[in-house]
Image 1 (cartoon, one colour):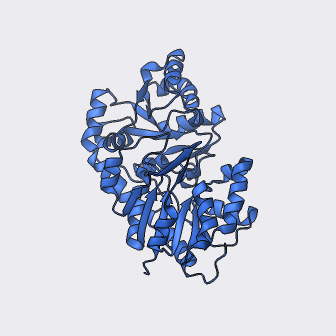
Image 2 (spheres, rainbow, N blue to C red):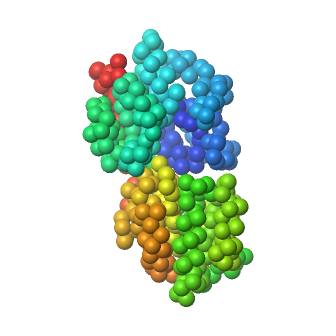
Image 3 (tube, rainbow, N blue to C red):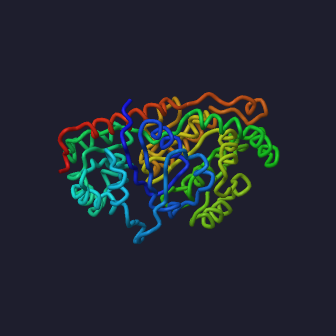
Length: 388
């Protein structure tokens, strides 16, 4: 395996990227440059993430931020000094556009790959400015990395991109998730005892409490669910924080289900995985979701997932086998899916928590790594630069 020199320029470090960056570090002579410490919508434990990240990395602080976009000074000098075979930029950002324009000025011109989280729903509902930026960036790029084959085919058909396109799903290493689940075993029992969860079924939501996540729809469906005698011993645990929290708490009180709803803030990794062990199913009804890493984690934890058809991670769901793909705006479908998967699960018990459940995930992390490597190889070895 040839060790190509690769620079990845990424917005910020997130837990679901650690496994991939570490795996790519084994494949490439890799440098990762982050444009900011944390995304504006989330605050991760960066010290913990850095301790787990093995590749050469740095956070670029010098520059300006505007409208949620980062422009950083010194990127081209770093690329020149390292002289990589390829540079991988994220989305159709100012950084991506700038490198596309300036890369040919380097003594050793670098080939550019764009890594995008676009999914079919996003491509069907894009705004004009993003479409224009995409078209400009694609003219300069030599390759593209996407999350799914469906998105790959859309890029070929709709944007006529004639460079190589790699498919690398936003997956984490199953073993690291399983290890985290095992480590959280004792904590899951403590939580179940402290909150009197035994003999109940726990429905989980994990994510930011923002309007786009449509947690209000979970509450409305859950209110109808617990009115049914067959589901009265069901608890909804909302894990996350955000601007809608107060409004959602008020809504739970108005619906009369506050005793069945737990509002939990953003949790540490061990606490979160303890809840994954407790969950009967996970619900993600987002109106907008490029991927949804929690779907990956929940499936490995053996939980069926009710996933919005507008989320990229819908491709991980096999209907009626490991979950349901739903229209998040259809209240009846959301309710019937909740009933289906709550009936499927057993009430929480000590015996149920003793072993880890069998994974429901059909996709494999190795496939994501291979897809990434093969794309870099094609671009690095191409004799003709498409974007120049």
